[in-house]
Length: 116
Image (cartoon, rainbow, N blue to C red; front, side, top):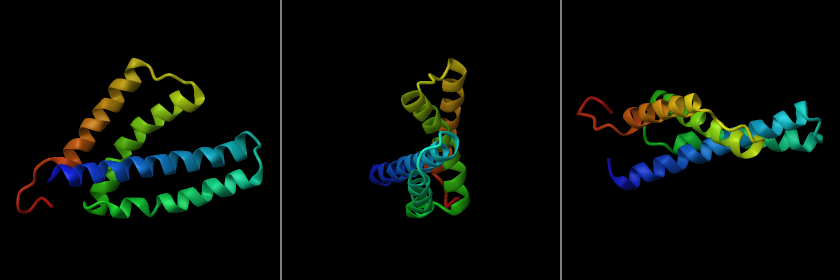
């Protein structure tokens, strides 16, 4: 796997994470914080487009969605820290790092002829 393929893959993961977390956050604000209805509609629209983004990955569905789970965990902690001011503790960070190592192994480990 070339570096260019890995960089594009990481880009799609980060974009998907921003869309899922951002869209979900807008829906959260609408329902929990009583923001205007259009905030919820914008969040729902972003969530629909989030569903399209993972299709740009080159791996198969199961691997992409399993790996995305690790990306989502790390990005959710960063979002909570940046947007909500909830700093992750060391156990959050250690757990997220384990997840990201798992993502790297699942998505980018060299595979033989039968390990597509």
